[in-house]
Length: 72
View 1 (spheres, helix red, strand yellow):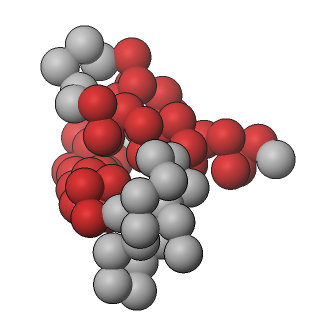
View 2: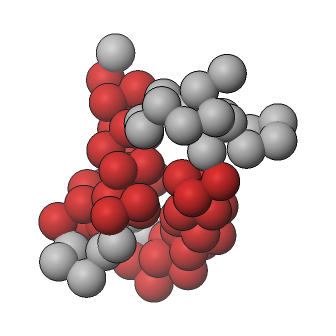
């Protein structure tokens, strides 16, 4: 199976390749801190991640993928 973002092979039993899986896990982990500090939804958090110029490419790509999944 392929990563839905970059078409590389999926990492072990995850939904993404190794790089995007790592970014996904970091996004999920960091959301708890953001939620406590800002009381925002996961979708709002993803939008802020995408807009942040300091966000890495893999994290931005995962955030955009997750937002697109929710809107479908």
